[in-house]
Image (cartoon, rainbow, N blue to C red; front, top):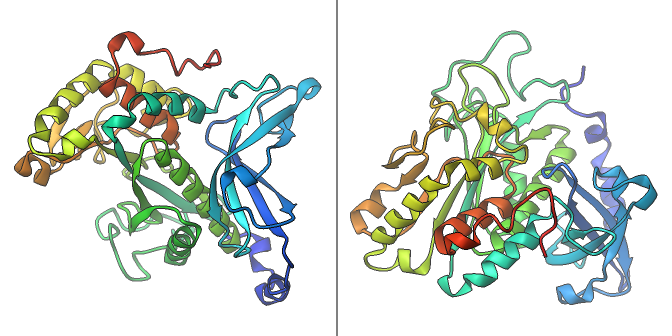
Length: 378
């Protein structure tokens, strides 16, 4: 079987000939949305007569929800509501990528539209200026289902030389990583950095700091860009939290968080209060930290390979085996942020930031009202 897709081997010089053609005043807009799995992304493109200057210039659209696990065929039309606009690094200016919320036939949020729920929480705490930074780990595979760059027979060297590595015997797929980084910068995604991870062919990029709802917008668009870059190179991206069984690290989406008060003098006390609240709702968080109610993350959060146990909650300074890590410099300076290491690589950032904010900053009587999967929240 091919380790890279045949389509990636098409002549890119021929493609570029068409990419260089002028398009007049018209603009291609690619609508991007989350499908019914809660982790897959879909997209389609339309022409506008002129370049949109703001998100309000982009019209609503619709799609067939019966083909995205979001509707029955007898009532399949669903609405795409543009919410965040980015430059398109694949077809270039003036073309746009537009992240959309999905509404059902009755214009209520689709079940996997956690952005609608997240927005309501963030509006309630906007004066707290809550910042997030998310560390997205991911793994590259060939189309043959084998980790990209791994020996066809047997296994690579044990973990040790791969984290932040350099060299063709340690770093597999750097072209994908660097092209994705540039694509994010061009698009306007608030990418912070990137590095090779502990398992070979596993990498990480960081997005943030982003305030409130922007965190989910920017991470979802960064994921879309990564899928598209991988498509061009013919390799397969997976956000599986434990892509390889055995003595290999899993993949998470560690989430850093702070309020304005936490970033100011004496903020460590507020961090301690917040982490205590998080501990009281550990099961509720685990349920939302992957799209399958914690079942995916259960394979990763074993208490080994730099993780805490899914069954326990712990806090530690500079401890990567804790549920919550307080960075050493934060402990010394008595202010800053903390890191929740429990979210899985395939988490929905809207769901993660929503429940973190709710647990830390809202009255307990308001808890559990915004993320019930079995009903719509208006």
